[in-house]
Length: 496
Image (tube, rainbow, N blue to C red; front, side):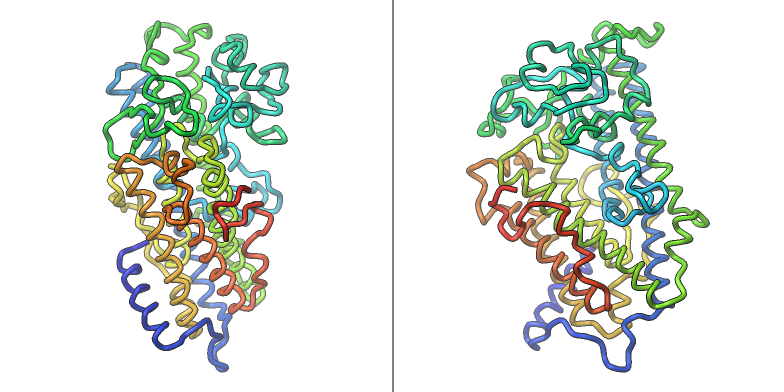
């Protein structure tokens, strides 16, 4: 959220309280649905989608280049550069998650069925034991964390994989089983099991191969109480405490000058990274192109002529905002991990970049509301500095002013401000050395926790989004999917 919006929201919130203001309908002579103005909202929303996905493609290509450089010369310097490229690639992509839950190109190829590439791009938790060796225990890394109920990758005859299976034979995985061919077809067999823990593609597969498990400083698995002693891989401020995959995993016995050797574990890891990042680029490109000028989806989304069509398209935007806020981000991505002290259920558990996932997902909601996209952070200092595709357009805030729903707009902006204040504290703690997996430890599960405050703020935010829908004569029950999560986000300490 922009600082100007933060300051304005705080000021208007005080004014609203002083005046006894509340959500209100517009004046009798002002129609809440103005088709020409809704068209402007839709065009801006589409512009932001295209810009953010374009930046996601650009940073994924930069990640591919860094991985290729690392493959050709597997030094510690190039290893660090590859990790940094992954972190940068997450910055624009995280802001696009608000475009889910509406059968847009990320979730659907035909804009009606849910067959889109999202599961291949950003699904988690990862089936790391299917990909490469892991260490296990009965707390942080038991069967419920690293195991899967089934898979289509050829491991254990496509059956279940338990922690005991993973510990008993560390070659019982894609890297270790040299009879398995690593290609795009293999990685397409992702999230096929009933529990969907058999994820082997996308950002998080690359993350695992770069960072490995988040082990403590004696290179042992953590037990839910000692994560503050997890090894620190790099000095960059937002690496926080992450995994410690040794360079030897990708350098020992490796030669970029020799033909690919499918029996070399180092070469197999590089091959996996090569295939995974190309698939990621291809999938992101398809999504981006769905939002391009003249593309079928964008044309259908931005073309309206009646009030009913305008309401339907506004409902799609609000559904992305409301369902991401409450069920997906507050519930699935935060409360499940927070309430159960579950490291494996944090979004980026290998790199400990979850604080950025939370920030960026929430920022995406603000982007949709304000009609603005500032770009992305290329040097990982917390400030967007790549503004090539920045968008500043006509947002929902502008529309609410047009239809004289300023009091409701103030409530929305106050809610967004409260959320931003809370997630900023999560980010600040992580950058100072207390990553999200430490913030969720048992002793930190209190009502004073930044994670607790963020979950509650996101829940409240989703309620105001529903109020906006109702004021615009849209069914409020449709914009916050109650089935998106089983978490009670009004009580973040309750396990889901």
